[in-house]
Length: 413
Image 1 (tube, rainbow, N blue to C red):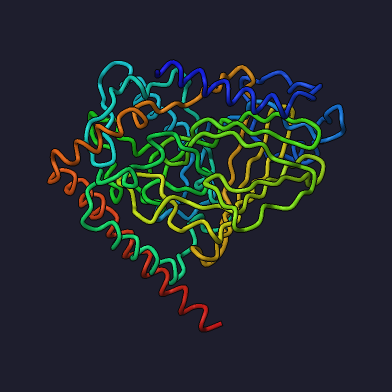
Image 2 (cartoon, one colour):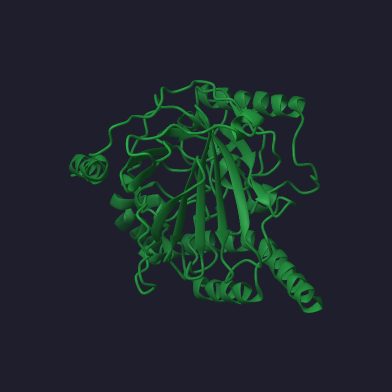
């Protein structure tokens, strides 16, 4: 049965993609093994090659190899790190990775419980770290905007809905991520949509462990991988899973012919995406009609803090050189944040990288066992929920204070 599901999944992805790209006549440029940083004067003057039908060619497998903090760390006011600091971060990351391979560390999950053997987190590729101190480039302070007072109230309602439940009372208490059900990924922050980080998230680095705080809370990899394929009037973006802090893998077939978004009554966990070209090098994808699972807050992420009903998610894929791309996305959700925020990652072209389908058999096959375990040991299931509620509490308090301050600032304008 499992093998059959794998085959059907792969056929579905391949058939859906090939149906759109059958007209593709041009392939992406040859992969580069060590892409240079984007943003130079030469990159700004770069003009992307054209497809056979005249569109900018942004095809290929694009990866963000550089680790970067999503938000700027507390007390950090600089926009960039020094070369020495970056080198030391990369050295320490390589030491931790080698420790995983040699059995000298272990993975610990959301409640600081050992989970997978550390060897599954070993990466033979040497670490790369961005010089920028935060992936958020707007607001300029590198921090997420405050929540609105309405969002604070809504989240309190979600907490009330979740209270008293175990982490396996029903399938609604289990996160979509463990079953690889696609949701629109980048704006779905880890830790219940609140971007908890450091010790507040319960994942601080400790001796002898490889806590999943690298990539699970504030620190994230640099985006992707994305495989972009084009045909006349369409772009297809196949995304591999973005780490524990993001959403899930999925493929999107994006019309570029100017058609309007779907009517608002039609909503989807992946939303309704429409694309267009901006300038000589940029593919713009605007996603609306988004909805998210809820209102129960699952025991681990991803959980978008709002409903998605007021969210517009805008991506910009800008080719800056033969093997470099700047990927920016803007989350504009007036129902959640007092202002939009924009994130930037620098991607490199790696056409020799094989994107794999992330098939979560554990979550699919083990749902009956997970729910049965909750019934067998209700006390532990409730304890698991209470643990994460206590982890959320300091951040919720902070968000309430920020919302009140933002509301007061608006009144004074």
